Each structure stands twice: as structure tokens, then as C-alpha cells.
Length: 277
Image (cartoon, rainbow, N blue to C red):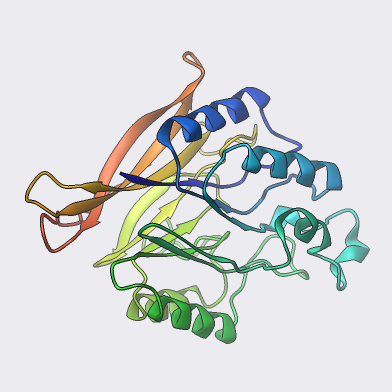
């Protein structure tokens, strides 16, 4: 089994130390190959909060890590930094590449930056970004699970829900699926969810992993993607997406829902419309 852990909206500065420890225990127990953090590492983009976030991510001990900036990772009160230095503190701890690409085993993940220095909350995509991600997806190994990660969700909670989606989201989804995308990962709304907006393309939102900023009645949660051997026939495999919620009684994250989201031609399972909500 190969495992990717998707975290979002850590909001260090408004985080729960106990929940942080539980995430790290889960990552160690699962033997995570890759960690994807889709933004909002900090609450107010301070140097101290970025340091806390970096220490937490490093403590997960994943073999590969992909980290994106969220809108909370751009200075709000130090507004003057938004002119040319908006990502300075983020870059100090997580590198200057705002759109990293990572591969670990069969996972191939392309990060895209939907934040904008001149916007406080809303996101956007440029035509150049859309084409660049499409080119990277087309270059992915043929057997890879091709995933695009962003902070803002590219797909709404329902087909007619435009809330929180970045500009050009529809254009991006169509172009990237044509280029081979099979999964979209995002955060921002603090509400976990899984849906199949187009046949063969899944969209997964992670909730807030470790912060006190809970919404929509959802607890702290995260998503685990896995690629597992299928018992149906030799050589087959199946991809799964699972929601893990923090349980205050046990003090651990527990798997609440697990759905198949595609498999190989051998032993494959047909995708189904599913919901983490």
C-alpha cells in the first residue's frame, strides 16, 4: 500500500497542540509516502507561525512533501509586504517555488498557486498557469495517479455552487482533465467533501487539520489517499480516498469513510458518487 496524506488549513497560531500530535502519530503509523498541505499554514503569516508550521510538517517524516501557500499565508496586518514581498515569509520556510511538483511512487502531484497578493480571500488562476499545469500533467508517467493540488476548491460542493472557487476554475478543470488529471485536492472552506464532478475526475476537499477554526459542524479532519493491491485478480490495484476525523475521546484520528476512486484495468472498481460530508 502506498499512502498520501492531504492536510489543509493548519492555521498555526490558532492550532491545537493535542490534535497536532495526533496527526503526527497517524502519519507515522500509516508510513506516509507523501504529504500534501494545501495552504493556510498560518493564521496571520507571522514568522513565528511559519516556524511552527514548518516544524510540524517536518515532524510528519514523509519521504516527499508538497506545500502550497493559502490566503492566510500572505501578510494581512503587515500590508506593505504585499507589494513585492507577499511570499517572503512563506519562502523562508518552504522554498521559493510556489507551484511545486512531486512524485512518490505512483503519486504524481502538481501544485498550483491560486492566491493573489492583492486579494485577501478570493483566488484566481491565469491562462498561463492553466496551460503550464496541463503540460506537466501530460508529461506524467503513464501509470501515475495524476493529481492537482490548490488552496481554493476548483469544484463547488454542488454543481451550481460557485462559492470560494477561483476565477477560471471551470476552464482549468476541463483543460486539466483533458491533459490527464484524475484527482483535485483543495482546502480553504474547512468542510471535507468528495465528489466526482466529471466521469473519471474526482475532487477532494480536506477540512481544517489541526486548528480551532472548525466550521459546518465538521471536526478536525484530513484525507488519506492510498493505492492498494486488489484481491480481485493478480496484478490489480485500486485507489481509495478516506476521510479521517479527530476523535476527542480516544485522542486519535479515526477513519470515518473510505471510498474507491478508480483502479487499474485489471481488478478495477468502477467509481461511484460519494460524499465525505
